[in-house]
Length: 225
Ligand code: NI
Ligand code: MN
Image (cartoon, protein in one colour):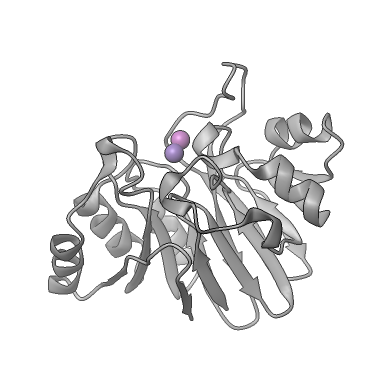
């Protein structure tokens, strides 16, 4: 499995020959100016919630690639009205896709569209494949429910926000890793705006002191797990 960071919470996840795009917010992110969204591959676009910093480029990428949007019912309906195909889910539900099994799990956050309309409940995804299992929390606070995810799925990687202010910060993300029983974390939702700038070195060190590897990628950089 190859995971590429496109800035903020936007990721490309390659599983075999399938490409998943996650929360694409690229064209308005000055830090991601080097990423050309017309070149991105996607069979599916996973959307955690309706905030603009997670959905901005969904429509463009879906129309470019023919990718299917996978998200909560409200977000899938919203993009359905724009002629984009989707697969609606809700908390606790799983579905077997051609890349693996996806479970939509809860997140503690909010989820409105840019115009204030209702975007359903925010969520995260547990992705189980033949080789690796990952948890993508989306924007969320730390929650004790994360223990359940670690109990149900042997995780190889957790993708967690670390920027604080709008989501968990570094300390709570480390606690989340411990709840999840995972020793590899990919940090997202940091440095994009003034409120969420973090000290990379300190964050990585704090994780390492607790036996957890925190990956903070450059935009465009990938890791293989
Ligand atoms: Ni958000
Ligand atoms: Mn966000």
